[in-house]
Image (spheres, rainbow, N blue to C red):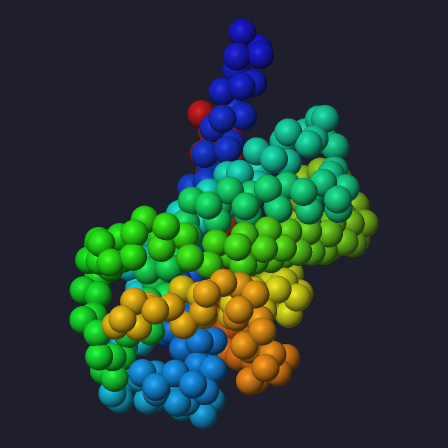
Length: 317
């Protein structure tokens, strides 16, 4: 009976992580989406694309899109972004927590940085395989502008149906290779940095307050989660951003003749180095930082506080 009860609690804890992650993901996208549109358009603009407007900087891009395309332009691809982020964060926290439990010999044992890295990498790979079609649609919807000559996609369902009809099922997994590298490395770096910085803050606070560091959910406040989320996100973005650019360029819609702009990841790398240099791999990093650093803070504040609320509810039962 005890073993059965323990398994039940473990399963409940995993779904609590998934729910908290999903709520956090939704809150993040709802606030930061216009910067995501700007980032995507900067990423694919290699100076040789004629169906995209040219923007001087992030404020100019937001102003230009708002003036020429209205609120719809700033929130292009919003539904797949909400769906993708909510599903991604929910699955990520779920897979990440399960991997940590599997690597941990006991609940009290703290995992090493290497095991945190392995857990985050595993979660990232699984999430990427589940969500790549959603991100593909989001990218294409965000790149639709009044300058486009081809028939536009009329939302998430129409985009999926059109892509499958015109390009086949395999097209839904364009950009999967850089996507896997991105998800595995980005998530691994972010969560490892988050966990290690969290240990440092908890140790400092537990010494100051003479409280057992096992109860770190009582020691840490929302401001701590905000700092942890932002710091870990900056580290992850700086180290993995080129994968985002490669993926976005691969996920562009083919020409009206059905010819893709880039054939594969290596083609993107060669062409980018040839025409733009190393800086081409960091196009759009400013709106990316503006979007994702505060977004990471929001995500972890929401996630940790939803998790606390669920824990408190469970203890009362």
